[in-house]
Image (cartoon, rainbow, N blue to C red):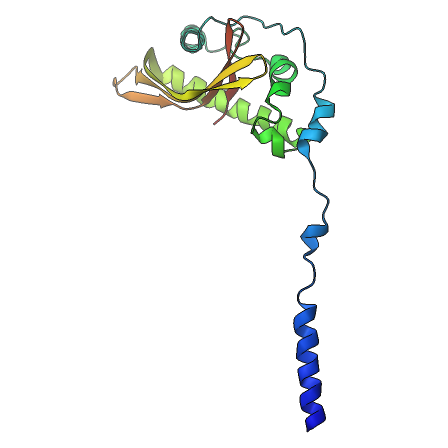
Length: 191
């Protein structure tokens, strides 16, 4: 009987101490995306050349809405950062600034960004088409974000009137407007 108790006691001690094995996740290599992306984005597109742009963050949005009201199919290049402008001139400066790129591989980030932009633009165009084109209010966040030579502002919403009922319409797809020197363009659009 003594040996049975000793065996059970020994078995329990071994079982309990065996449970304190090192967590397998601790052995996984950590990826520092800042280092990983710095190699990919090391060539910051200098000098920065923008097609179009406007002198003020409110003006670029107002002018884009006017252009869309006149012709929904018109080019967005003067108002919204093109894919090249975004990837070569803006994106490299956001690295390490608390953006999603800091924790996402570039191969995953870029297609996701483009897909979200496409859906956001589609929804934005539909909302602008329903509006009367007049902006009542911009709801900007107060802080200015500095990304190298860029200054950027987050936009929570734009309040407009609908063209049929006059009721308020909220546009929330424009997420960020960025300015380089005296040229402002819409930088991020997402649903």
